[in-house]
Picture 1 (cartoon, rainbow, N blue to C red):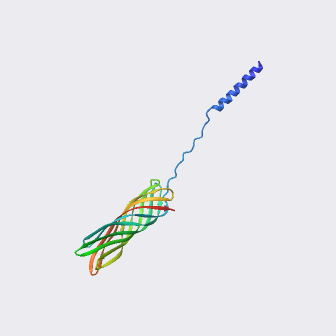
Picture 2 (tube, rainbow, N blue to C red):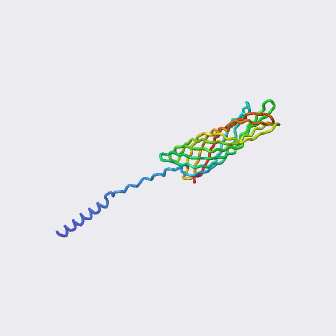
Picture 3 (cartoon, rainbow, N blue to C red):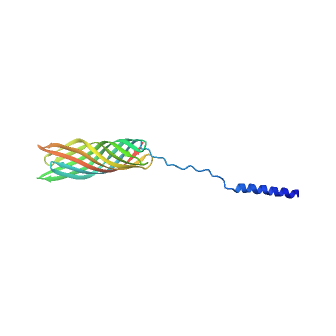
Length: 213
């Protein structure tokens, strides 16, 4: 009799232990993985290229032409709480904008060989996407040629304004698209005794890539 009671007690104990082992165990929650928010603060430099749609005038004669535009840029951004980004950028570009026209037997050519600018930038960051507006001082050259008479090249200072959007691929590489209006003003030019007012402006459309340090 005592043997039966002991065996029964042992069986009950083993069954309770097995049931405890089979019971579902509490699982500790796994912390969610949060992707880092991109920070635009820092220096950067890069290259860009595209088209310049030039609109020029020599006296009353319009000389509008489209050419290649490409160069380098560098700048610094500072990002504030809330996503606002303020920066300063400078660039220098080669331009192939050139247009010729013959009026009254005189062939005139207007050419823009280079452009540059120094601009402020204001944007609002949506993580790694930064739409922005930009504006500042523009400079460049304008070459006026009257075939058989002579030519005149002058360097001008004007203004520029536009907008763009940048996308940060990772912590260092950024791609962009930008459109800007550049106005190099008008200036009186004398060539071979002929005095004319020469005007030049352009709309620049570029794509570029930058490296953020």
